[in-house]
Image (cartoon, rainbow, N blue to C red; front, top):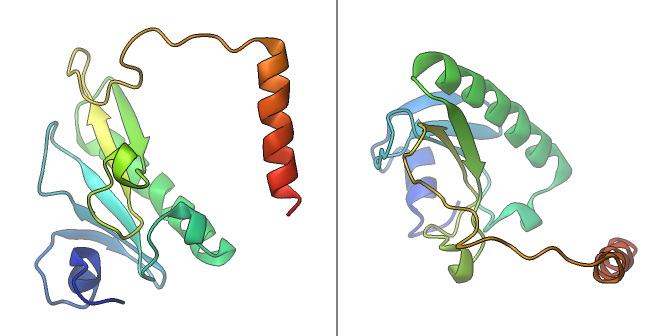
Length: 141
């Protein structure tokens, strides 16, 4: 836990939240901001900035909680789909520097979370191969 982190404050009972699920490693609560009813946040209890800092045990627990919450939200709220997302850093609009996953029921035409601002370009085969090799090298480090 760390000072001045709203999720740490929630987990320590120093800030109010509507907790819907909790286990030894994770918790889930209703996001105060509800574009469509049913927006839930899934968080690890350990304070880490983002997914890159998760240990494997916590990451696995977080994914298990995410699956439970996604199924519950799907059952409890009307939707024509669902978005699950995690933002890292200012370019991705991360607002709280504590790893969290959003589970958001979607409605057709709700215009929430446009993935691309326009039609994305298709990378050619040589570029894709180069990108793949860069990731493979990084995995080998």
